[in-house]
Amino acid sequence: MQKGLVSSFILNKKHHFSAAEPSRIYSLIDEKREIAKQIIAQIPLVALPQQLPSIEVFTGKEGVKTIAEDELKAKEIFVIWG
Figure 1: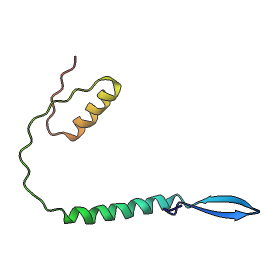
Figure 2: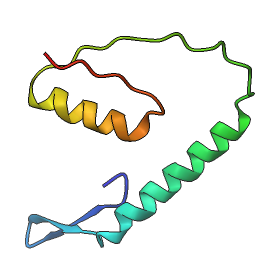
Figure 3: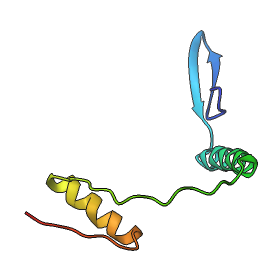
Figure 4: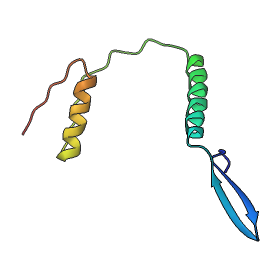
């Protein structure tokens, strides 16, 4: 109710609830995105040190899924299957 997604009313001594249009969720997301943009614009940019290589271990089906997603994003990735 605080976010405007649900309203309520009393009819015949009973509380009734009514959902807002589903598109209201998109409006809330857009509002949050604009707030995030404003915050990010205020963050000063600084030179970050060069990132050192890292090693991660993934197991199971979720691990395979994570590796596949990382491969799509990474510039360079090495995988050892055991």
